[in-house]
Length: 243
Length: 310
Ligand SMILES: Nc1ncnc2c1ncn2[C@@H]1O[C@H](COP(=O)(O)OP(=O)(O)OP(=O)(O)O)[C@@H](O)[C@H]1O
Ligand SMILES: [Mg+2]
Image (tube, rainbow over all chains, first blue to last red):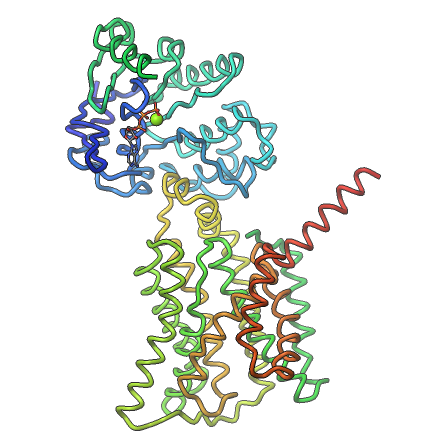
C-alpha cells in the first residue's frame, strides 16, 4: 500500500497563531481518511494547504511522492487534487451543467465539447441531479448546491478528493442521502479526505481518522480506536465546555 | 458574458454589410459620425471582451490607441500602410501582455489606476522624445480618405465580433466566464487564471492599437495630446457600460446613442464636456447597472412571464 498523499511537518502560521502545527499523515490509495477535531482546530486550513489555497509556512506535501507544496492551486488541481469548500462555492451565472463542466474541462483529466458535457452529465447522474442539469444554480436547494459542487470535483477524475464538511447543514433525510452518496464514492475505490463533524458519518465512512486539536495531531488510527481515545474525548469535551 | 448563436452572428454580418453602404448615400458630416461610431464600436466591443467577464476596468484604451496612432505616424515614411496595421496590433498586444503580467495579479483598484497611468506615462515619454529631437508633432500625409477609414474600421469591427464569437465558444472563453464568476473556483478547478487574464487583455490592446493606426491619417497632424487623450479611455468605458457588457452586441447598443448625444452636447457645451462625461457615468452606474442589455433582457423576461400568465 503506497501513500497517495503525504504531509510532513506541514505548518501554517497566521501571525502569532499556529493554525497547523507540524502535521504528519499519509493517505493510502482507496482510503477514506477522516480529518476531525473541534472547531478551529485547523482542519480547513489543512485542506487549504493541500489544495494550494494557502502557502505553507514550513513542511512539505507530496502527491504520489512528488512535491506539490509550493505550487499554485491550479497546478495542484491539474495533478489530481480536487476539493469542495466549507462554504459552498458555485458559479452563479451558469447552469448546473456548466458548473460541473468547469471541472470536466479544466480538471485533472481534461475534456472538451460533447465529451466534457457527457462527463458532466454522468457526474450529475452520480450525485442524483441529472434532471436539474439545465437549471440556473440560483434555484437549487442547499443540498443540491452541495451536490453540484461534489459533481464538479468528481468531473476531472481527481486522484484525491478533499471534502470540507460536505455533510454539514443537511436535515436528517438529506444527511442519509449524503452519507449514502459518499459511501458510493468510497465503494468505487476513491481516495478521500473527509473533514467532518457528524459522528455517524465518520463512523460509517472513514477507514481511519486523524484527530486535530489546536493545530496539532493528537491521535491517528482506525476510526473505532480513535473515537475511544482519551485525548480525543477530552479535546471534544473541552471544546464543548468552551462553547 | 454570453456568446451569440450562429444566427445572431449572421445578423451582425448583415448589419455590417448595410452599414458599409453609408458612404454611398451620406454627406461628409454623416460619414464623419459614421467613422466615430465604427471606431468606438471596435474599441468598446473589444474592451468588453476583457472587462465584461473579468470586471477589471481598463483605462488603458488611450495608451493602446496612441501606440497605434504613432505606429502609423512614424512608420508611414518607411513602410507601406497595410503593414503598419498588423505591426500596431502586435505592439498593442505586447504592451497589454506586459501590463497584464505586472498588474493582473493585483486587485481591480490597482489595475484601474495603473492602466490610467500607462497612457500618461507613454505620452510623457513621447513628449520627452520630441523635446530631445526638437520635433513637435508628426504629419501623416496619405491618400487615405474618410471612406477608406470607415470601411477599414467596419472590417476591424467584423473581426472583433467574429473573434469574440469564436473565443466565447472556446476553452479560453469558458475559462474567463468561470473566473469572472469566482476566481477561487477557477483556480481550484485547474484554470491558470493569470494566464487567461493576460491572454484576454491582449485583445483590447491589439484592437485599440489597430484602431489608432487606422485613424492616424484622419488627424493629419499627430501629437501626444491627441493620440493619448484620457477622455478616450473614459468614453469607451461609459459606452460599453451603457450598452451592457453581458452580451457581445451590448457595447454597440451604447456606442450609437452615446456618440449621437455626445455630438449634440459637445457642440452646444464645448467647455463642459468633462463634467458631462462624469455625470453620464454616474447616471449609467446608478440607473442602468447592466446597461441597455439588462433593460432589453429584463423586458423580454417580463414579456415572457406575462405571456405565460395570460
Ligand atoms: N486566513 C486566515 N487568517 C487568519 N487566521 C485564520 C485564517 N484561516 C483560519 N484561521 C484561524 O486558524 C484556526 C484554524 O481554523 P480552521 O478554519 O482551519 O479550523 P477548522 O478546524 O476548519 O474549524 P471548523 O470546524 O470551525 O471549520 C482558527 O483559529 C482560525 O481563526
Ligand atoms: Mg473548517
